[in-house]
Image (cartoon, rainbow, N blue to C red; front, side, top):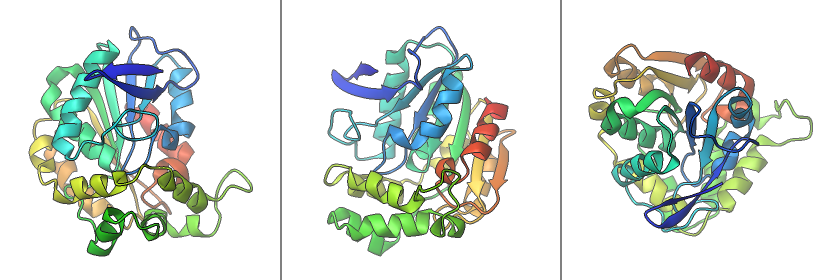
Length: 262
């Protein structure tokens, strides 16, 4: 499906059913350098169980027009305009990593327009290792290897995929390699400098779920704890033997948590 935001085309996967703005909507927001395909194992359930699904490509990512936006604040403001463009009145946001910061900031400014929020792989701050930041800014393919090495938990380094023959790290690297030049560097820099997560958390008024992986080296559970304390009645679920990319590493457990929350 294609939408128009700021007179530019935004692509969104709909989980295999046409998007109906009259249904409760769930908007899935991917992380740095990624696109809508990271949510393939969660979106179909919602689309076929009474929800309107939009797994979006952020500006400059996937099939959406560029350029990429350069700050979390700008991305969150853009998300507010996307919510208006989709036409749904009942909207939940599900974000991963950078997408969780975007969703958090968007929910904080949208008031009662957002009815539910799920933050996966999130931290009150998301500092990026200087070596990784330098590699992404120079479009060095080594950045893809660093991200998939740090991003997937140890079990994912040794198979552990429910689908026989599938390689989680290889798939993650291929996804990052598809990104346009400079996009991953822009995204990582935006995460590195964003310091307003706690202020945004204090303004969130909707039910909120935080999903963390106990083996997450990028945003460990302790990084999300301040947000859980700042958001009224936020619920936290920690997935065992799971790294940063939980929607791929633990797809069923991630889906079950989202179903219960949304």
